[in-house]
Length: 196
Image (cartoon, rainbow, N blue to C red):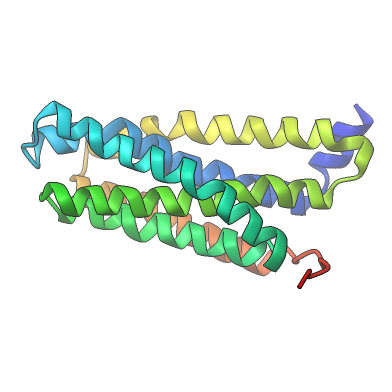
């Protein structure tokens, strides 16, 4: 309980974890509704709709180790901030496109942005935490991650029941952008030793 209290009272850990949570909100929204958009609006067949989702996931898997190494060397904060913007811009552009190749490009770009945030945010939480509280910090991080992922389809579904894809995705993209500025202003970059 002491470890949980220390972790949840550290605003740096909470805000950094929230970057992952909010970014995962956009992932949940995209995973739930990109295939539906692809079939109903872009008029793609189900196979191509599945490829769009696969492009996002495969790109994230391939980019995570690279982005993790870059954040080890150059710092976590700029990677997380950039990743939030990459996700926001690509998400907002998806409803503007109906061509399969443009959509697959945007899905892949979104996957890169996801890798930026995911690879660096967990590492940054670990950087901020005391050794004896790693478990509590990672548990808190994981809970926020899961809440965001589960909330994405719910929020997107609520928005889409009242608004178009374009406005719904723009609202979620704006959440990412606003969050990135809060993160940039409130969370300091932990000083790291740069290896040459």
